[in-house]
Image (cartoon, rainbow, N blue to C red; front, top):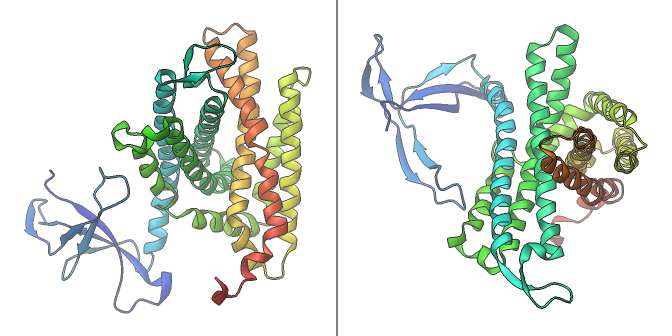
Length: 388
């Protein structure tokens, strides 16, 4: 389907040091290129087999052989991992965006099915209704919708910070870079983990038919599973977040973000009941997060084990907290739009309800993650290997 295929390959030079410091990056073309730019001889690389995967069947994954192949060093020797991470940071935001897209498609399909599937009656009425009239189906749909909306907002905020880190002037550029670095593992890790829950709910709304391949609901669930794995697993995102982006700078980057959250909440018009509610819930979550951050930073003894055992919950706590902040801001924007008689009033009415749902039903998970960090971390390493 193309004249040539170029592979970027991570490999070691013969005299390379051990570990990740000895990895170099090479460009390996399928067809060698002559000095005049024309295609020359075929390189000695081959696809030995196509892997059979759980999902993403439209994307072929192959076992490759590069025996005796000719490659060209990219960048400096032994700097391959640094080159890869240049790509990786952009790719992680891409995976966060992919997670939003898969979750959104799963939601749309579940919503369509809920509006068509007739099952049961409601209250004292004998007439049968579509399942979207059932409270538990509404709960699942709102769980999907409210989380997707803040996931999308988080991706927007993270990508905006990446742009500002390149386009802003001097000091501002540094502050935006710190914020972008902090948000990248959260966006990738939290959005991909939420995508698992959302696509699972998509199947649940379909009931038994969701388990049948012909409906297509299961495909979203299978395709979503890779998002927590590639471009760095959730554990890698979490370790990067707690180690490099939090402990290394003694929490200053997170503290700056929390100050921004507090300032935006301080500016809320508390005469509006919805904003007063969101403000109180968000303040509680922020205070709990600050306490846990102080706890982690103060635990210098066995910090390596501590950070490794709590890193996942730390990432999920911050993702949920930032999601609550973005949901609160959505409430503020929606109220202003509705007061101005926006022509998109139905959009803002729905946004107001889904944002309130996130604040009251999803944001409280911050306390769950915080309790797990504070009380359950030591147990992770307590069990001896032979007892597992």
